[in-house]
Length: 355
Image (cartoon, rainbow, N blue to C red; front, side, top):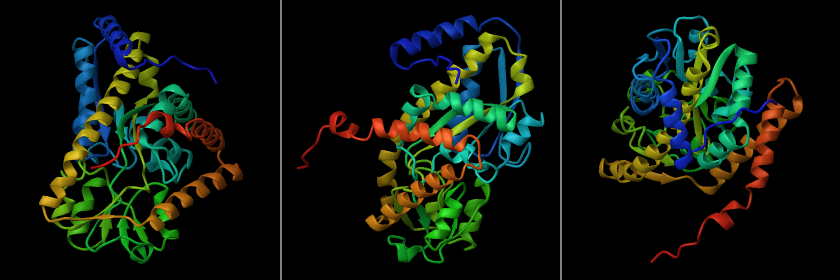
């Protein structure tokens, strides 16, 4: 695989970002439409809109990107299709929505057997993951792809009744997406999928018993806690969730090299910014829910172990079947990385004795 150097973070990365930004002050102007899958909230504000704002700033105003809510330019769950067809020059989505077409997307978007967010970021930017994602999307779907936005572990469920054990999942009507749709069935749940804007009304009227969506903080804005007074954590079904910037290939191919580079660097900047912001806000959100009458439930170990086991078995089986060209390749890359980091906590984290 031809490796392309990706800008590093830290002081050196900021210096190179400034250099790229300075080089991008002259050149063609752009007026892009960005299709998204979001009605609003952090995914829009610190994801799609943040990308648009930083592109305009660092290009000296040459990039103007108008963001559109999910469904405004096309199906909210099919943003890459909207972009490929030229209805928008770019889009912001979760790559895992396309798992039914090619399950490789679940490896890039996170699933029940994934790394945590920190390890995923290292794999994407230091172990070739982002390059593989770019090559995969261009070859399979005919669009240009970069990571854009990173979640920490999601909430497992906001629910209308307590969910703590495997028995509690039996028959539970839950909204979800990606590979977890099939895995949840194996645990006895009754999952359905829908775009984000439809989740609250379905939960409110009882069409579903529970939903997963984002992290503790992200889930405040859609207001699930107002109609579902039980929150189960941690999100073992989604230990991390990298999101995606997709760009029309015809548009990309016409761009000067410096402008392409600017897009790549800004997408990476926003990804790290979102990860840091979500981590900080999640710490506050735990108390927010308690103060608003939500019962916080830590999942029993049996649920956490069973969920991860399902994810790992699904990935190993899919890789072994060999039906999808890219799956085994990406899966092996992640397995090799996971092996190298297996004992990392022992030398990276200091044990703390709580008072």
